Image (cartoon, rainbow, N blue to C red; front, side, top):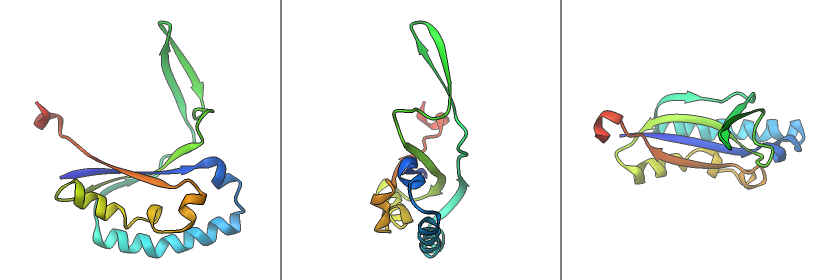
Length: 124
């Protein structure tokens, strides 16, 4: 089965941290990511850009806004499609990602979620 890994971070918390501190944490992530990619069959990986445009329907009119939702500092940091036998195995594999392995994860608002990807042809 295919699963979507979504990694989140708190942009405000990350932006308030000194670059040297972030560089050190990201360096520690590299070893964990090596293990993650060795044990997980990742088919696709993306890092969304920071530029955002939003749109929504309000009172029958389409509203537009540049930038992320100002009420939310949480941002998507990574998206991956990977294979696993079932949701339980997918979660076990996803837990190898630095999002849940480093103590600094809480400080930076890191979290992840895993969702099964359902082929629309099979959903009918």
